Length: 175
Image (cartoon, rainbow, N blue to C red; front, side, top):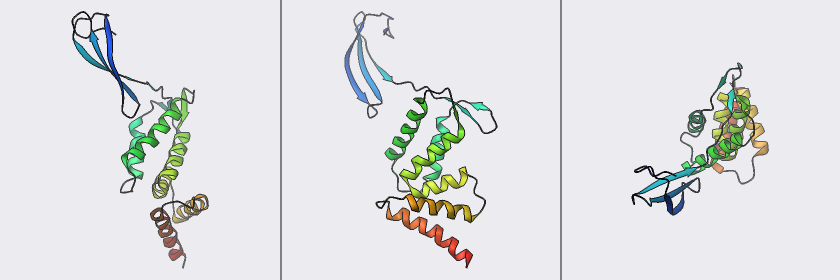
C-alpha cells in the first residue's frame, strides 16, 4: 500500500486488530521512507444482487430499505440493536453469497419475514400485514393461527400475549 504522505510503496504493517466485531481489520502502517504513520481499514466488499421488482423493473439493492423495514416492524419492541444488526448481516450475507446477479423482491420479503419471525412474533405480524397487503382481520387471524402452530414452547410470554390480543379482538368481532 502506498504512503498517503509521500506516495512511497515502501511501507509496512506495525499492528493489526479486528474491529466492528470481526467485520473489519484495522491496520497501523508506517512508511519506511518518510516515517509517517497512518491507519487503514480492511473489510469484505459484499456484491449484492440487483433487485427485480414485481413490475419487472430492476434496481440497485438498497440496504437502507432493508433497515427501514426492520425498524418499522420492530418499533417499540423489546429487541436490542445488536440482535437487529445480526439479523440484517445474516440477510446481507445470504443475498451476497447466493451467487446470483439478480434477486426477486419476493424472495427478499420472505427472507425478512423469516428473520422477523425468529426475532419477534409481533414484528413478524406487523411486517407481514404490510408486505402481504392484508385487507381484513381474517387475514391477520389466519397468520396468527399459523404462527401459533409453529411457535416454540420457549417463545416470549409478551409475544404470546400480544398474539392472544390479536386473536381475541377477532373473536369479539365475530360475536
